[in-house]
Length: 440
Image (cartoon, rainbow, N blue to C red):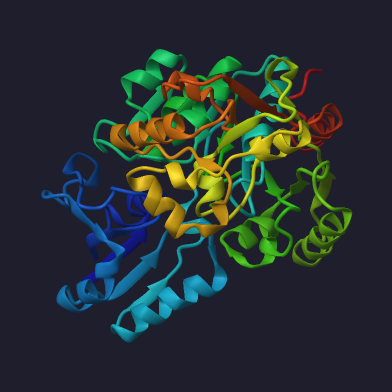
């Protein structure tokens, strides 16, 4: 019997277990390790999800304990199962595993893809924060306009009660409250709900697929980080970011996405240097010369045309994009600077875990990541905003943060969607590659 540890971050790790190991009597998964996301270790993958071979469930321990765990539990195989890390980082982890005596593994798509009964369009990326969300929204809008029933299936973010989160369906804000969604979850679900799309997420993506395809003509896979899709795509759309040229060939598993893509969207060309765009194009041509490439803009606008000239502002941006995504700015910063605002440094006013976040991610600079993985962290975010001496708060997150965090200052949201010509180009691709979905 092979003894296995799965290295993860509450997403790909559980999926790999469910589809590859859960029912294999020749394997015993002795533990998951957890990293990247705060407070997700110290739990147990519950027996309700783990199945009859695991009556006690599977423990989830901090990744820092990996080497000792391998030796203590006589582990044979260690499966790496999380995303958005440099290639060299993966090999450092492999070296740690090999030095402890175990085999280091990456599971491929044939071992982890599930096959749907309806067409699947996947949207993934080479890095988190590249612009998957607005790309997915544009595709959903086109399919809905064609009269197709769309089920958006979002990459997992199960940070709470795993058994209760096995299959989640979101069609209204009340569903977000009922499932006690974190800010990160709301950032991904709310924009779809606002447009009338049903969103599925959770832990068991086999059960999720059964429900989603029962009410839809097409499944739209909305990826997380730069992970590979869990479902076998009939059309694979991958988003690249010219603000981080070179990352399309140096991050795992984003490079694999680029090589697998049918269509590659180079997003944000309206705010990137032309040389950066050209570099990304060259790299993608080498990785996947057969892919169709669309250069897309994501115009940014301020709520109600707000006038911020000369005002002192605090900018709050999407958390994952800024932290493990490695970005030092987002839509809120670009909009505020363009409007002539003066950015105020939030670091002197940070409280609690946000102080640790700024220490761990020094590239953040003069912006505040919308960290909110639990009620305590949401409260710390609100207190940090309250302490900042500013005239206004610019919200660059995909959601209306005011719904979640009490803000005692004037607020302005920064919005962004794919421009009309880019959305039309994606619609043309849908017609060409999936003609059965297009109107006759």
